[in-house]
Image 1 (cartoon, rainbow, N blue to C red):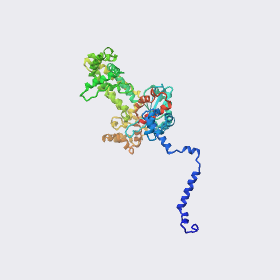
Image 2: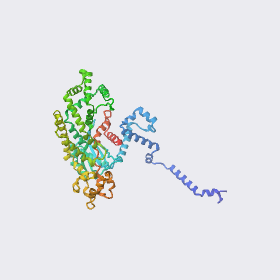
Image 3: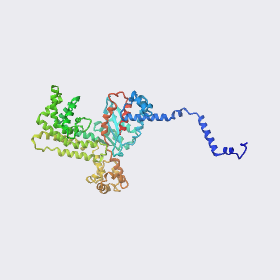
Image 4: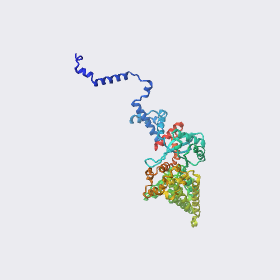
Length: 542
């Protein structure tokens, strides 16, 4: 009866918009329930649990590679129990085999996507524990980061059957193509000065990369100059060699030495420590050791005499040799003068090498630092001291300065292929404008410098007005970011080149880092796994 009553509440409800929408929702949901999923869609859909499982596995890969924890550690029962009981979703982390096969390539591919816009390329070769020939390729942006540093990131580790100009050029080209880095966007190749590296650039890479400038590693050059400085000081080298050997595999002697030094330094505020050990792969370590010996040399004779009494006839050759050196009064005085001279004069070498090893921008100041060092060698190499008793010492130190100065002059004269560019690029440093020529043609080795229009007089405005004003107002670091409107073309060229001398010392440090990945306890890693672990370990540390 109510259904036939046109004015009933039921009839009005059935015709209402709310009721009609409810029917549509119910019908659509029933249709979805009846619709069967395809096999493909079933596999593609992921539950919340599976997504979280993938996330924690990938995060675990990042943690392990960043701290160089072997993926096999997850198979350890103690760690497995800790992850399962104490870490949220830790039980979802699978065994090492599945981590290597499934999740490591995913994290590796994801990290590679972040390195698509790097333009300065650095590469060097090294051998590893399995006698592989490994070419490490790094790249760096041409702009500093938020900390004002220019950091280099690892692109690839290429395992070569043999290392020569052909294999190196092919590996570099393939790596840049893999990262979609255009040839014309690469502006610097930074290598050591090995003959095959120079040949790789001159015969192949120079043709394929038209805008590239080849610069050999400035830190490597400074290390060679530093070695030339200390090699002539043979008496000092003998002391340092015997001193290091004296403590090799001698824990009790180390303890006696530290106890002895502690008694001598008591009340001075200095702490007793072991002498730094000169290591060929740790640049500046020789000079750091000399500075240590300069501070402690006066105590050595007494300690060696005590060791001779303690050891008797069983004293090692190193202790006996030191006793012979230090027992001779003339030789000891000569050695003391050498240590004092080298310790005092080496500071400029140490600082220059640290300057080129840093991540701070050095392009505009590189040539000036080399020139200052050359002047230092020239001024201190004179043989004009009159003290007869120090004649031999003067000759030795003079030889050190002459050898180091000759080595540096070699690179300033052209052995460094980018030296002319480094000399001219100083024009972008406002503080150097007044000391350089204002002839635009004098800067022919700077890429795109000729494209700066003469009609706008941007170059002359910079040389005569904006550059001096920046120096006067102590605003040299802010000049190029504030001159975009007034000198658009000149600013563009300056900002694209003034940071292109990257810290190539990082590729040298990779040797030690690589040995941590492929260690004596991890010799069964596949080449692909080594490359992925090494790539993630280095880049995630940055």
